[in-house]
Each structure stands twice: as structure tokens, then as C-alpha cells.
Length: 226
Image 1 (tube, rainbow, N blue to C red):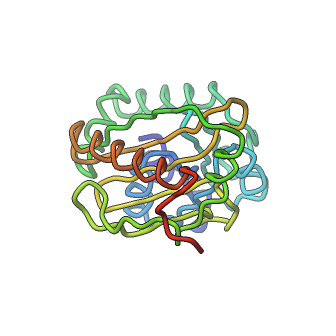
Image 2 (cartoon, rainbow, N blue to C red; image 1 turned 135 degrees about the vertical axis):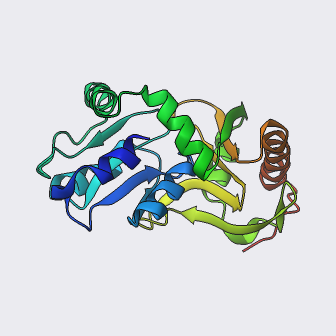
């Protein structure tokens, strides 16, 4: 909702300022950016990937799955190159004052137009060897051709925006996706998932994602070899 409003009310940002998101952030951002006619800059997990783009104005907005965000000043200059809560609260107040409506209600309007996502994240124990294997997983090692009843449209191990390794794998279909990556601090791996078809579809994605990851991490994996 903030992205949609900001890019429609910041004419000084310039026509080429892009929308930044991490690979595990909601696909609703993709849909908002497409409707705005803005380039989507999708990067690995970590706010550091947005810093240079905010500094030089190539990014108007950078946001991640933890709800951290930053965006440019009205005149297109950088405000901060790290995620910030104050700036998000200020834009929420601005939107409320201009529209006379709660930002949450405006989000529901937006989701009604572009799709209402549901999401979840699960985690499971993993050894150091399994975490390394997951981090090095390649698209060629994923056998599945469908995800929760839909054809898979992309399997990524590198972020589309900058080509940097995402430290895992992201599998996307038309109405949902999942990403699997090892924890950087714990003996765990995490699966992020989202669906635009409701909670039951989301659970199908999670079950299939878990099976795919478990197969890839098994010592005698049946996954394809590069």
C-alpha cells in the first residue's frame, strides 16, 4: 500500500526509480510495481542490497519480509540506507491525512484489486552439511514441474535484480511460491511460502516444498544432479 501511494505522489523521484524487494517478500509487491510501470529490483535477503540504490536514487523504495523499509525524500534525495520504522509511520500518517481513511482499509482495497496473499514460514533442523547443500542447490536439481496444481514458471538460485546468490532456492507458480534457505545463525533451514488462493493452497505449497527440500538434502537424494 505504501509503495502504491508513494510512487503516485512523488513526481520528483523520476520515472526510472525502481521498487526494491527481497526474494522472500510478498509477490503483491511485484503486482503493484507492474501496475505502476516501475522496474522491480529483487535481491537476496538483507537490507544491505538496497543501500547503494537508495544513495544514488535508482531505488525509490526498498523493503523486506521483516516489514523493514526505507524510501527517498520528496525531492528524491536519500533519507536513510537502512530499514526504518519512523519513516513508515510518517507515510502512514500522510496517507491517512490525504485520504481520510485508515491505511489498513486502503490495503484491503489494493488486495481486492490485485490479489490477497496469505503466507507462512516453517523451519526444520539441518546439519552444517545439509545447510551447505541447500545453499548450493541449483535449479537443475529440482525435479518438480508443478507446484500445488500449477505449472512452475521459474526456479531461481540467483536474485533477478542483481544476480547475487540467494543462498537457497525459490520456486514460483502463477498463484504462489516458496523459497528455501539455510539459517545463517542456527542449525535450521527455513521455508517461506505464499499463496494467492487461500490457506488450503498455501498448505499444499508448504507440503510440496518440504518434500522437495528433504529429497534434495537426503544423502541419497533423488534430485537431479547438475
